[in-house]
Image 1: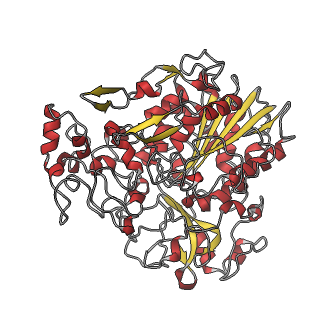
Image 2: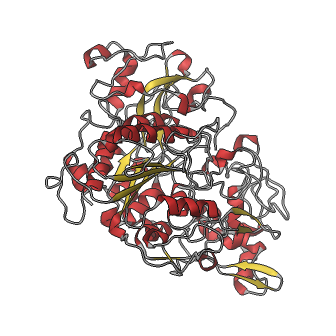
Image 3: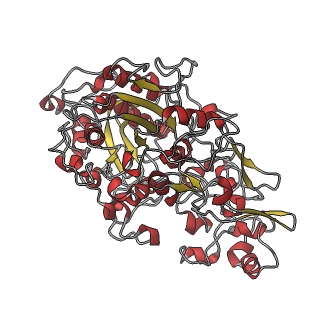
Length: 629
């Protein structure tokens, strides 16, 4: 989670300093935030800060796509030489959906994204294009991201087309942009400009529990998207109503025979929470105050109470059947032997070390072990459960003809006056809206038994720009380096150490003992640092085109607190943030890996090119893929 007490909004920052074709190495001397003119790399040597930034950047200078990147984007035996992106004629219609992470951490990545959008549309020869944007903020049902506190905490996976002042982005009066016969945008150049405006309009103070996977699923594929997620009278999670406004947007946006492209942009691991998981206790993981817990977290952990911990087996064998949540002792059938075993487990009957004992204390995480910023980390070992939706849900959404509806993904029953919620099931109950015709849009319409559409799984393109070591996603993704040998079974052997999600310094990497102002020499991420168990080690980092003065009003700036040894800071008092960073996007990458040959469009948000559009290689690969479908 991030502080939300500032007034700065990244959407109001101009991005003209990202012009194409000019060297991008800048030297911004102390106190000067405006851009210098084009500068040669020789001239940049006069600035030590710029020289350091150049040495640490882990990407190429060329703004053209590498052969490996483009080749990897062309599956099904297609060849880039046969259909170059600038000469292809793509038939039919394209429906392009951006899923944008709008948490505060994304501030440093949004400017490069805006500057790269024109590259996507250059030479794209679809005659009919829709462009829409949704955010990763879904509220998750708990009190941490309640939309009544701030509407941008929960945008419900609906299309976004208004800025903070309520003004609608020109051309998106219907919720999205349209180019082609009868469209709202006259040409591709204007479409690129308006797409940037749509992205800028996404509120930058979103929910810190980013849910890019569920946001894409809810808008594009969920048969009966919920209107509200809340705790029932029994304290267990429940999904209420059907969001017909979203369904109407879906029907208007997706054409039955169009090519669909979904571009996900994020810099953290996915936290798509299943409120009905763990017998309905999943809802609590989206809350600062966990139901029935009396273990106070403290202000430095952002307040509230801690979650139930895992059973004793979780410490050593988190993948075993004996590892589960002590919280289930509250909702299990006391006559069942498994429930009796759980209620007698040593981890579930003892309180955190040094704390009070008794009901509300026993079986809960210690005050310093459940900082909200790291809640969705190492969940099976810490909590005994992972309350997020499984990644198979999203692989099925992009490839499968059948999906569960809410009634079949969790079977509920009333037993002795209690609501019992079964585990998640990837049931094949309803037609997948992505591959169906005559989509529902209003109350009374059929939601499940939809007729077949003209689109096939080969007509759905998924692209991911996420936290990853840039070298591992150049060309065909190195899945072992990104995720390990067999992540489904917990085997992370072979993984690049930068991709390990960790709050502690990773043994293979160095620099955790260095002071603030020394940003290290690792070409991928600078160095390790002391997170104080409140944050994660980085997957990668990159030099900011415009360093930020953390003493000035603005979004959360890493270098404001100089007692934290961030490997990002420098200049006067080390209170200037010189580098941006990203965390390992583990679950998003697992979904892409699960898509097989259709999951090859992967880029790193840290691969900010020094020349041309910052994310040119990624968007060149996306454009080429679209042109060859």
